[in-house]
Length: 491
Image (cartoon, rainbow, N blue to C red; front, side):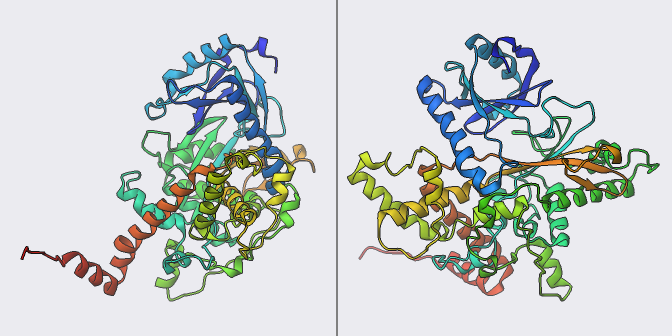
């Protein structure tokens, strides 16, 4: 892509996160990612370049080892004409949600990351004339904590996502809790996975989005109500799943199409299209922790029907969900066991601040950094080396817990399908597909105290406001505690 040939009118606003803003090209399957910063806090060009280089290196040397060559697209850094960047900024500014405009796009350095547009199939450089469907899923943490450092027994029974839902509703983030439970999605059991995906479709929040030809057609925008009109979604999907079928519109047709979508998503999530060495590295057997979440709506339905055992089929070792789970399970100590080790590192840095670069806390993220992550011992020998390894593993785990999976699908005829292209079958059609993972920026070292405090808030709120209501004994204990007032008088 030659910078001098770029026209700002060929790019459109694509979305943004806390640290960066993304635009996509109308004809090429690429996006540009620019860093953001609060007004009047612009970084120097050298700082911007260093930050972007760290992101690229982390994807290339670390996350690619965990997820695989085909799944991770680390991109490259390019330098653009400043006039082009400023014009582009002016063009997309009106499209940015108001809630995101507290930070400005970097228009001073000219540096940006060039990445593939993951809403498109990753087997082609240019946009294909055929329609493309893309499902973005943010699966979240797929296991129940198994660490002996956990202080509240509820954390061994209910997953972080299900507990956090109630706090988010109480804080006004969402109107109602989702029935989605990530432990069901990561179970490998198709019935549980179908239920989890259906729950995501019913209450997408920011965990599911669907794009058609790169345009968002279903899911949450940054500051808008979530769109959950299944009939409208079915209208978009019908040409993909029933191209020449005479199904009439209505509830039956909508349910059939949504069922087809869930079936295809499940098959692609369980597929294996890549290999990597970390796929053979098992951190801790899932069997050491509980394989189901007691708060899962699927689990509760089983209990209501007199069944008390949830089947967990396990994930195929080569699929992206398996690799994601293995990276997540680098969080072997839970934040409660990790936080004292973080404090040990902090105390060491207070004494020896010059050691921060030697310890690679801020990079470089190279092969040496990755190799240190493979030490899976949990016996604390009291050293700074042990503490630092666990801290870095926790940061990787948090990154994997917050990543997004992109599934791009395009209908193909039987004679078009080749061995080079993975194919998934639906009832009336077949799709060639690509699966990718994004949002793989390493979680900040400085965010660990926040995670520790947030964990306490989530658990305490759940115990007091959710579990207590389900348990009459606990409920009465809380009530007694709230009604009891001690009055002190001067004597």
